[in-house]
Amino acid sequence: YKAKETHSQTCIFESSMDGLVLESLELEAELRQAIVKNELHVYYQPKVDAGSEKIVGFEALLRWVHSDRGMISPGVFIPLAEQTGLIHEIGLWVIEDVCRQLRQWADQDYAIVPVAVNLSAKQFQSVDLAKQVATILDSYHIDSSWFEFELTESMIMQNPLSSIRIMKELKDLGLRLAVDDFGTGYSSLNYLRRLPLDYLKIDRSFIDDVTQDLSADAVATSIIGIARSLGMQTIAEGVETAEQLMFLKDNNCDFIQGFYFYRPMPVDDATSLLERSC
Ligand code: C2E
Ligand code: MG
Ligand code: MG
Ligand code: MG
Image 1 (tube, helix red, strand yellow):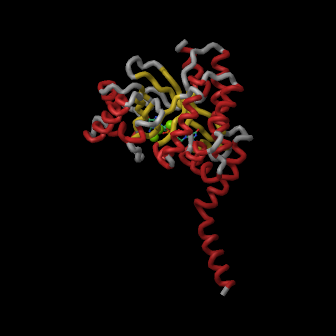
Image 2 (tube, protein in one colour):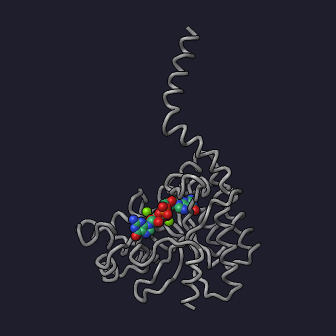
Image 3 (cartoon, rainbow, N blue to C red):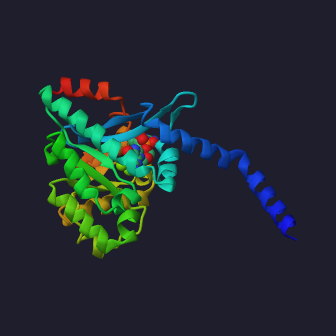
């Protein structure tokens, strides 16, 4: 009886070892090595002011350039890093790499624009986040107004009360905070008004459909209205066409991000953009 059970378990194990499971075990081992092997790179995607179309900030987007597999999307390896706990190490590396870069830009007298870093759920919930961030900002002499975080609604709503506390700690450091992918989660408007937020980022799914679908138009303009009445600003993500841009300008969206203006780019290209705007 025992042997039979063991046998059947072995079979289940073996049959699931092909494909995805094996793949992600390998990937996990390789992700552990990625930092030391210098395979992680921060790309920078500009955000522009909707009126002047001038660059007003960057979003830091992580890239993994794997030696044989090529570029691996953060959509694949960030969830893996979350599951395995590697996200703590990787997340701190991103924050530090961005601060190192900001320091270099400042030392070269470029006009600095703030850089927004994405946080994952586990990072956000870790007890020492604000303290760790403060230490890194300090050691690179980074003005806290140069640094922003993007959080998602689901991260915040998992535990609204402790989220408010953590967000206040980050705000006390002088950082600005954005809600990413806004409109796709389940934010209660009652919490939203109590959150110390600076920006709502309108999710790409609504931007994709504006000018084609009246309900997407209505959602986008409602988000802009809610943000305005709560004293926050709006950023549209995933803007790809002139029509989308026109719609957003007409409806008083504050900032625009998307392939229409710029794709995420390696740091040297971002530096050239700063050079030109000096
Ligand atoms: P996100 O923060 O919502 O980032 C926006 C995503 O949309 C990025 O994908 C960006 O490259 C893409 N994008 C920007 N403009 C356009 C556009 O006009 N059209 C289209 N089709 N896409 C556009 P990416 O770089 O693949 O990142 C995916 C997600 O991975 C991010 O979504 C974010 O949640 C996560 N991520 C990226 N870097 C980090 C990081 O350093 N830490 C954490 N925790 N998560 C990260
Ligand atoms: Mg983001
Ligand atoms: Mg987003
Ligand atoms: Mg999105």
